Image (cartoon, rainbow, N blue to C red):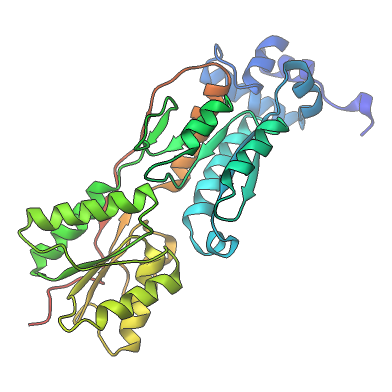
Length: 340
């Protein structure tokens, strides 16, 4: 197709029955365009095969038309943990609909600040997502210093003026503990994530509180790193206790599935000899043997909601925090009454 034969923004406007200005507003994610109109414009653009000139758009409005995500996690863990692909898929779905791109940086631990400064200094992104919140997170102040729009995944424990996706893990963990206590378990352990991560701390505290409310001891916990190898090591430690737990609440599915393997290795039947719960309700959780009792979340939806909120913020639409459904327990076959 020659340059002169390519569809133009005028063609999109004509097909959608709107003005060129409305097309521009819709594709740039700016306010004032009804959602039905925005969808009609996007459908027209797809039908015509029209794509925007990002270079021209960026020059005309001094924007990168990209958002950033900096993760300080080992690359191999990102590939193994289903949370990140699902979240990124949700982000990408929304960004593609709005003519935006995602810039992903995976950096060594301790180099996140440099990653954000590079993105801001080179003006490669218009805003960022903030995942893996830390208990005392210095990145909030850094992004405020850089004047970088951001959306946080969960409400930080430090003061923040950024909108947050109101992720709440506590109901899911509490439901898992109550479920086990109602089955008759009295020694319920926890394999936690790293204490520096806010969500790991929130899940651990929810486990402690639920046990306290049930009149049970909350003193059997091993910290791991959210990886399968870490979950396996933690499970071996727990099973070596003189009075081993009859149930283990894991901070994610990956560690729980590794724990199932360790129990099998030790000749301990699940759930007859040991009950196990996970967190995330990953696709694999329903297909392991036995199928894993776990806590359902929706990282794909979180990605979509977070991307919408960030693009609105970049466009000057000041919205508040974004509510999402709380985590909930999915009971499967990996839990049962304790051995008598």
